[in-house]
Image 1 (cartoon, rainbow, N blue to C red):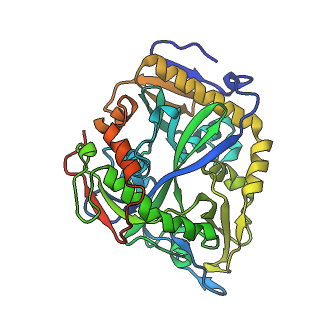
Image 2 (cartoon, rainbow, N blue to C red):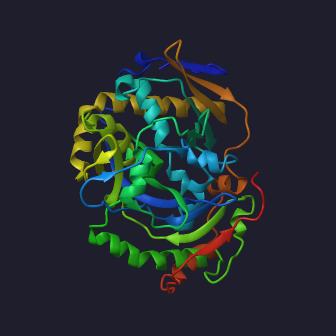
Image 3 (cartoon, rainbow, N blue to C red):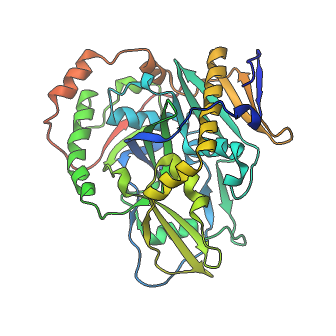
Length: 408
């Protein structure tokens, strides 16, 4: 691994040889939080929200082609001041006592996919394109933020980009009113590092009893959390711990277990989708269900839902060399950025075919009150309220926590 100069580090693939752990497998996977983006005039999320429910029509179905607005990075498109803020707000609503110092890396799934593609470009069917990832340090935790040149696109009437988005509308049912996308946060251990990963989920399959069991307990859990934050479920109340945010948070939805979550892929019938094409994506988020939907000129037959848990483990075992290098690369990013004591930018230089880590000075990624979660202990009265309110009654419906001041 290269030494760390003052301002710049370049990494080639050969630098990652023989520097990773002896074994790198994902363990201790936990679903932590979730939310939906809501169509509104100001940035608004629903916590815990819900994925859309899989509801396939019988027989063949004609689906119109995708058109109009399509998000590339919805978190940045809807909340450009702090695309990562919804991750933390939903996490602290569902887990008020969460210890941020237990996490080494916080990231979107997309960033890990890009790093994997740098290590082994053939993992991406479209090859390796230039990319940028922003990194911030909070204590010893590295926060990775996507940096996209465009956060959305508009597909014109004369363009063809496939059927994926319209297929989801036809084969799933939204569970949260005015939802435009469901995002989930999971944590796991990999190669000696603790990750917290956010990703978008296409849907869920309601055929496990655990779904209903989770639903029964969700209301009590959220009521307890709202009370421990000195919030009344019956009224709209300002959250005193987040006065620096302009993000509106609604209490709506239910917790859907990870085991029920689903990725949906569409493909023309004469070009079968190989699992190897989607395995890296679903391995990073530990998404266990897959629907491969095939069409002929927009006419789809009903796809089967596959449980690919075993296949993802097989992929993980078969790609240990790549995953070990991924861990080595992330450790290098952590070491370099920590040594600089602040922020860095990771950029793939297409001409050099190298990853470049550069020291930068920039505005903080998060509102100040969120950074305090690494340095301040949870107040004793909050811990007491969590304990005292475990038997709080459940109230159905939605409640809104309006963040009234602007982001820092």
